[in-house]
Image (cartoon, rainbow, N blue to C red; front, side, top):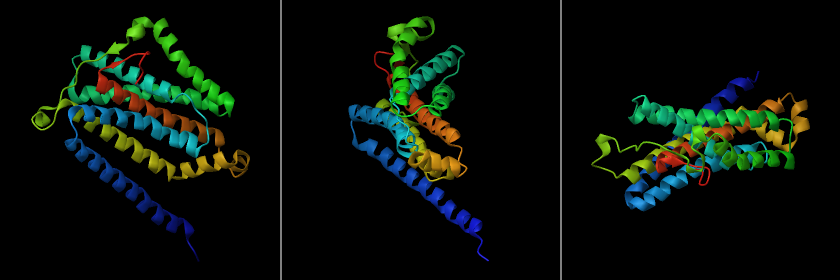
Length: 259
């Protein structure tokens, strides 16, 4: 008697472990590369890593689930504003250092995730150019919203946050730009590893089935609406993380130059 469920479980574990090991190895390699770069190139490296988070999210949304989105820049902006608002509130409360950074990251990710959830619920009923038009409208609406609620978002001037210095234990080893690159690389490493694990999971398989033939996937018992929502939330969360890191790097976020 063949016990297929047990064998599938055994093969699934090394796959997840292999993804994590590869992600950790590439992250360490990228951290080591920062010692070969000057401060300006490290700043560029940090910016690239922050943008890479948003681009990686599109591999799940567009590549795996087949949903067309033009609103990834808006998700980055929402993540940046969420980070800035949370960081400023924590600064006023006397919280700084690692605690402020982590809590502000959570604020940015939650803000972009909630917007992604709303778009995902709409995406379950829209497709093609209609979905693309909706996501494009969200991107265009960022500037008017920040202007209308200028009391919270400071209009076109945007928001500034307190400077995050290099931790004392690393202050004699690396410069500020290299520290910012380290933070961006670590966040990007976690984001990409999580997305790779999601793509190789059962949910990723359902995404690809929905992309290839939604009707056949539905007849197979796959809840395609839920899968589309999951894809949108995952993509939005990663873009929000990228926007939060971009805000951390530049200490500012504004509608005229979103993260």
